[in-house]
Image 1 (cartoon, rainbow, N blue to C red):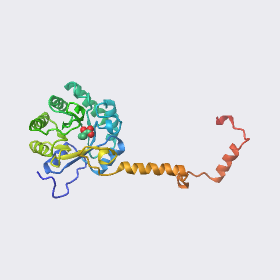
Image 2 (cartoon, protein in one colour):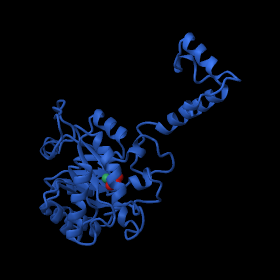
Image 3 (cartoon, rainbow, N blue to C red):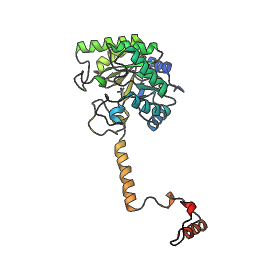
Image 4 (cartoon, rainbow, N blue to C red):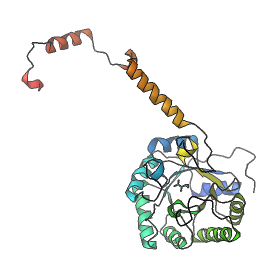
Amino acid sequence: MSRMSNSTPARPDKVGLVELAALKRDGTPIVMVTAYDFPSARLADEAGVDIVFTGDSAANNVLGYADTTPISMDEMVMLGAAARRGTHRAFFMIDMPLGAFQVSDEDAVRHAIRLVKETGAEAVKIEGGGSMVSRARAIVAAGIPTMGHLGLTPQSATMLGGYKAQGRTAAKARQLFADALSLQAAGCFAIVLEAVPARVAERITQALHIPTIGIGAGAQCAGQVLVWHDLLGINTGRTAKFVKRFAAVADETRRGLEAFAAEVRAGTYPAEEHTYPISDEEFALFESEVSPGVLVADDWL
Ligand code: KIV
């Protein structure tokens, strides 16, 4: 499959499931990015990304948790609704956090409906294959577009032996392949492949008619997703092998904050142009009313 189209693809006014399927069919890579608030989603939308996604990675990237497992439905709803308000053209979707879909199909459908109703999400994502396939089928049957997520699934990282690449033996790769086909058969409209060898991801991508969205899964996936704070260089520590920093926002933010602090301390901010005027007459009147010795009227207090 060609990863580059020969001409600039026409940009749809609004990205929906039909447009995402067409991007895959045309060999135009789908661009997906996480966003957890209004201004970020608006910037992503204006930049022309295809999918804005409030991931449960909000847990570690904006809420300060150690990993994605603690984030609650209420927290996802609050962050997702804000990101949704900034998203107009892109397809907007949200993650189902740990606990929202593992218990039963009914529970999964109930939580998916809540996410759609309270955030305005157009689709949800769930992690895992195996018994999670039936959850995906149930959510799709309830009329909610669903994206799968295979490979390194952070909600079950402990079971996977940590944050490690998945599918690196023939048996494990075969399992991923089978899970991907099952999720497709369950009605998923796309599948994230995270930290999977590029050759395995390519083979899975070829076998599916729905798009794969790679994160650490090589260039042959039908699309790519990265986490906002990773790609913009807001996270500055050690990152996963697949992360590329496309900007240095943390450095720029630090520079701005240090400059603000320095100017406040030096007395150069605020300057004249940052202040509001009052006429000489009004100010003189005011002065006369608050001069020492002038009695303050009762109705001022
Ligand atoms: O939560 C998240 O950011 C994700 C992406 C890696 C797809 O699941």
